[in-house]
Picture (tube, rainbow, N blue to C red):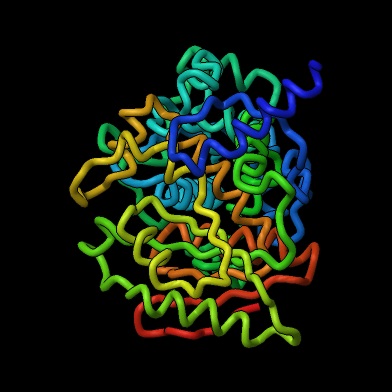
Length: 363
């Protein structure tokens, strides 16, 4: 009898997304991510240099603060710049609070005062004995950002030139460094979403599609939905076999994007909309106000940050990606694809629909 009850409860939780209701974070976990994101050794040379730098206890710490005005993808890329600047200045990065994307319920806020990165990225900062005490007592005087507004600019050309790296190499390597060891909090959130969206497990040859509309129109010309549909079809046509019922993982926070993609997609496509869309819908502003992400995160007491990271890991379950790398979030997806997923499976490819470079293939 108990087994029957558990089964019915589980099916209710897994099917509740379809009813578009708020679900509890407590979900029975039957399926796991394909990679152990708590332990993914870096492979690129630049990322290895970053590991060495942040673990060199002869180098002093320097503070870095987020501006708390932009999206999570932007914030993580700004952190990569702080790391590169720190390498040039011989300073190790320590991120200070507050950071609006920390889930106030899931994160130990006392630990986060020592470093705002540790809740999600526990192996990113404060590796040396005494670091935690120094950070807790706020005895670090050097800064890698300029308080109080925490502006930051590129100050690491020497590092790039020495290694013959470009800014794309920097961003990708630093994201590889960050994501080499994620906390159980992030893993659990990703697997919660996985089991909600894919109760029978992630389907083979999943295609991740990221649509960044909304307030992005203030920064770039938005890609029309027809281009996304054609992009998916391009991916399908490139396959050496016919996919009768392709599965699409749609990563978007925009209700208009969801509706238009659903209405224009062929009937034989199976659409899975990421859990961030549903979980954060009640916090979303009705209009496409600028910088929706920070407002959503503040309204949800930081939960938006954790849900977004879970959604990002779930996107990495795909083999094919349709992105718009004019968006920080698409760039983040592609950096993880290139530096983490593809070297381990040799199974991914990406179509980039960014303005002016539609249909550009990258493996």
